[in-house]
Length: 79
Image (cartoon, rainbow, N blue to C red; front, side, top):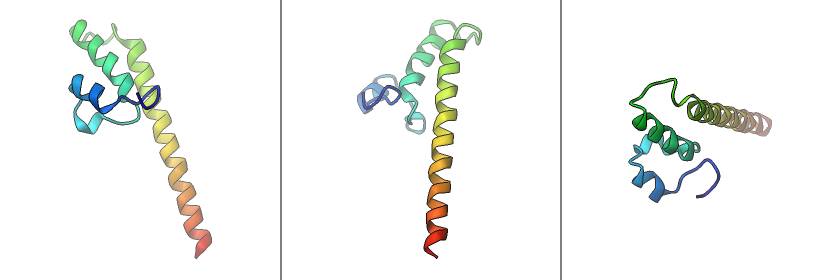
């Protein structure tokens, strides 16, 4: 694995993750999907896994927003 939350290409392919879902949190999506399939998609059975995955998605969004604002401020200071 590249990091604790990113699955390798082989892991994502083995778990049959769609390409659009192979992001920074893909390693957390794999056990979530396994839990969902095991429990027939009963939403209360996989709350912990879903919370971890959604938290990762939110933190990734914040990271990307900070990166974008940094790029915008650097571009504005160059002009």
